[in-house]
Length: 550
Image (cartoon, rainbow, N blue to C red; front, side, top):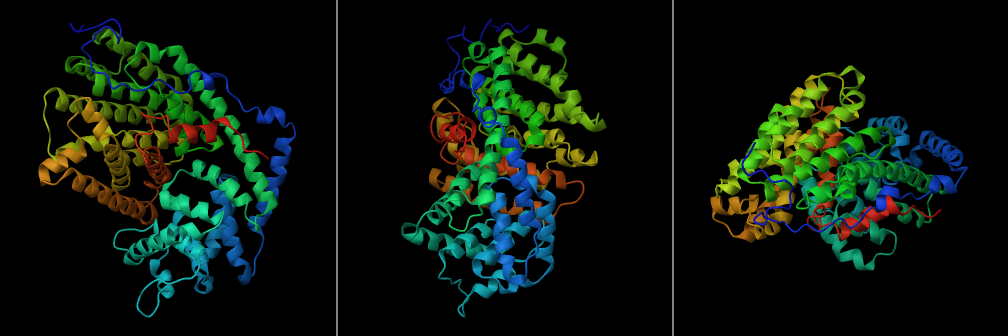
């Protein structure tokens, strides 16, 4: 046993303290329910009736003059968050739209939406379709504010070397910023939201919550679709509330906050994070496992970053490598609850989730990515305790994994169960470009928003500081370079997910994109996980506390 072992995590006054604020929710989510289903006895029947009505709208034949309306309908269904009810129908309609050449007659708004929908769903579409919207001087021109908005949203799917889309995003953004004050509701709010975070880079569930009232305010709305979206949001919210109650009870039973007061108490925020990555009903068990995973990994992260001595975390790393409950005797006492939680979580879910569908090999990969993450935490602890500042490349090689996104993407793919071959996981473990770009974006966005707070508690290693050291640039220049790198990696991620998929890599498209989207939103106004008292609280309230009025 380590000679520095302490009985609890509050006995040693010499420990560092990040001063994370307590949970802002208390025990609220242990008992909370909107009671939507209980208060609306016939709602399930009404929901199904409306679903069939919307399905008929999707499948209805349209002549060429009505195609723009069909494109708008599909886009609204997706933005309203109900596409998961009509995945096959939407795919079939998009195949028809892809195979004909009617887009040559569309206006800028419809062409842009057509382009975005097809690329989002894996169809190959050239950006050359936008060249006809340029004037004789080669400049984009339009008198339609909605057209500029749709072009801007479409350009967020740009890949490397797509100069037309690069120009489109720059011009459309300037136009929209100039026009914003003149626009009226609801287009004004759509544009404002897009300028903040483009739809393609945002969290689908959050976007649905924002778009439902905007769609409801449109004079051209379809009443059955509007009502269906509201009811569906509330039904799904009730499921999410049930899941959050269950994981909150698990968290409460372990009493992590009292036993490890130095660590972040963020079970609701963790659930919000995972729900953002996949909100559909069929992934309920996966959400609960991944919420427990993000909670335990957060405890480990805080222990290595803030509280544990180098000797203690080294012992913990060895215990994780061993992955045996008997190793609990070799780690400090205050760490034992973390180790029990970690191994117990995998044991709880291994049969019904991780190894489900006859995939008994999945547990090995799930454990290996956790071990890899902890090894990277160990290296960062060594950086800190030995006062070693690595070069930028050395830092990034380690931190691209220590950010945790490779681990969570692989765990999500495993727990979603939507892959056919073992080679998919072998491929992901090598950190291929799709997973690498997602992880790089996460790492850089994280560091930009957190490096100053970490420096206040003694951390001196971050992407910004390492880049400044290696390239002799100012802090402002380093941050700007990080933002440019984020844009580059988004384009690489777009290319990998839109044009370079096959049977092996395809299961990683949605997890890679959605975890990146969640990170963009969670850190868009600071570290929304560690400091969840602002916009994160408002978003959780909108998604998990209050149903939509019908």
